[in-house]
Length: 489
Image (cartoon, rainbow, N blue to C red; front, side, top):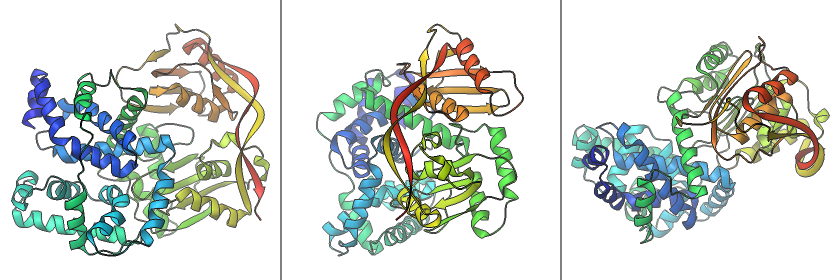
């Protein structure tokens, strides 16, 4: 933290280069374990130190920097995995492999736990996470761990032991049965590996530019990490199917509604997800699938989709199209034959850690007799393009605080890509929207259309887009990816 303060006060390149030198192996190792790709791990490492350069001034004096870097690496790796569509496949393959690798030898123990290590750490509490990183990643003594955490040596020892036991239970649920002692040795001996020799120099240069020199994938990862951090600080885990982020007021209404929905223990537990005191989702439900007709009285359209350590998917009062959209990772407006879907709205949860969407697909097939496949189909769409590049209502973002709020007759976007704006328009108009603006920045935009209702009138929304933001929507026929429903065999 002395180096952080020196960098913040004097813009010291020497101090920052020293920070990179000390921690680059740690960050690279976390990224590589999570992504299993050396090239992507280098990009994630670069993005983490750009993030450190941007956030250095806001770090408090009690920050455990190595733990902060581990969390940042994990967040960026998650974002990268989603964009690359690789994470679920890798975790599933790692899980299947781990079933046959259960011996207690050091090499096999590490091979068994490595694919799940970051996920196991992610389910620990903040101080537990810090203690494990200090003890086994930084190789600190218990006395040094205690000093960093501001506690006694005995308390630090107990903290580490409790954390290891939680991790042991986590691994057992994924088919890896090892003792606490074997896990501790495996992590201590194998968790840090050397980053490529030339990486420190390039990372320092890009980070000191605060991302200005970053390549496209790295810049995307940085933006994604900032969004994840902003979301966590908001202490809200509800993501609307028609919104990127729910406003605080709307989320409060949703929370109150869920509190009154206490039919059984499972959904009482679901309610607690929305009010985690640490600003993170709390998934305490067992490995299960459940779906049923919703009894929530309000006209909600929320689908809570959170890719945490346990990869659970949850929905409350979601139309059937939204349920199938969550299962197949496609917009609910892009279902080719929605007439086959059941009527009404549904509450559902899929909590199978390795492949929750696959589990959800199988359960829907069994429950409703409907399978589905993605196909390229020619259909009617709306093409979003730029009519007036100088419109006052569309401004490149300046504050970096991502969000989207909804109010009657008004949408407010902050730090949102054009693809996100197109997605919200698509959901509101219930027609596929194809983004052909060519705009690649993040934008701030406010739209008002003079109505009291939550759902905008299509003509008024189009007019507001054109007049206030210089964007136009034109009907067209294009071949796009659609979800085709079929009777299950």
